[in-house]
Amino acid sequence: MSHDLPPTSPAPSPSAPVSPQAAAEALFQQGVSAHNTGDLEQAARLYGLVLKEMPTHTLALNNLAVALRRLHRKPAADALYLRAMALSPETPNLTALVNRGNVLRDLGRYQDACTSYYQALAHDSDCRGAWYGLGLVLRDMKKIDDSIAALEKTLSFTPDDPEVQWDLSHSLLCKGDLLRGFALYESRWRLKGVQRPRYPWPEWDGTAALTGKTLLLYGEQGFGDVLQCLRFIPLVAARGAKVVLHVRPELVSLLAGQFPAVTQIIVRDATPPAGCCDLVAPLMSLPWLLGLRREDIPRAPYITPPSIPVRLPQQAAQATLRIGLCWQGSPTHKNDHNRSMPFQHLVSLLRFPQVALFSLQKGKAASEPADWNIASMITILDPLLKSFRETAAVIAHLDLVIAVDTSVMHLAAAMGKPVWLLLPVSHDWRVDANDSLQTWYPSVRVFKQPSHGDWAGVMAQVETALERAIQHKTF
Image 1 (cartoon, rainbow, N blue to C red):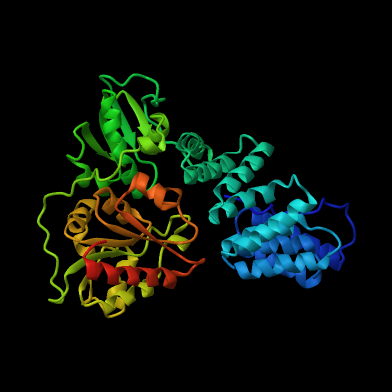
Image 2: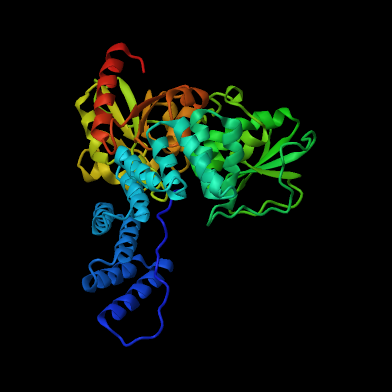
């Protein structure tokens, strides 16, 4: 969550006759005001007007670049930081160096980002922003120990900063240090914009006895997070507790009857009735509350597919393998621009007549096989997938699921179904490496981008693996 160094403005000067320079400064102040209220387009327009009158206004250049990064116009932001530094080559511009490092990381130019951060640190070894950005990009580069060291250095400047604690937790979890990682993962409740759900019952602290108690477990994050953490319910039950689940409606029918300890499942939008439980806890906090190490994590499978009839549409007679596809996650996910794959990269799988392809995709992207006029060869199942119960029933009838890091992957892996996971360079801690996946989902095999944004390279790996799978009938 490393941020650009904030929009800056010079101290106001005493009243003076209006000059072109004074008028430009007034526009600059208006730009800063618009920037701070979130009107980035207006801020960018005003900074542009300043630079038209004063092309060497380095603060306007920096602030415009910050706004352009937020507006996803990152190559332009990179160019403006270089311009700002070129205007004063004798004087180190720490703000431009740090902020340019952030843009370069966004662009997948990780080594260049490191260079920019290191240049800032060469001028000021206590530059917090440089240490912070370095910690994040080193994690992207899978230099996890170095990432942890850089983020711990960042935390030494601001020990109670929840954003740094949150990012450090992800690096620790990448390393497999679950005890420290999940302890710091609790910092999410102090992040800006995150509000802890309020219940009339006390939060379980992990130490209170659960014998004879009922614990309400709630999901506060995405579907995949809930599906991943359901595995901990038997551990809670082993401490003598009954469980009430408070989850989103799409999960309710799937979870009915899955775990003997669960006595009630309540839709998240509904208020739990009085007396339904004694204590509450977030599902994603259970690894911390239970004090689990990597070796303590229950392995998949732990989700049983429902016993409902499923008849998949018949495809070509020569098709002997049935494969489910999911290429897009939720567009509201902060990393969706990296983790979701354009549909065009999947069409290469059509070259295998031995394979019947079925789309498990939901949302706007579900229509893409029809948009490409290839729905006869990639069967769209969206109308059948009313909830995760129907999706699980369909997955049970497939031989393999090929998916990006989204809830469909978590569901299939939780069922023990073979999954080929398509990963960007920058991805989530729980699928950081094969040893992490062996902890959480042993049936998952990773296909990772060779370089930032290279989905074609991922699919080349998949095609080679699929040729072998067809030949040897093993995934």
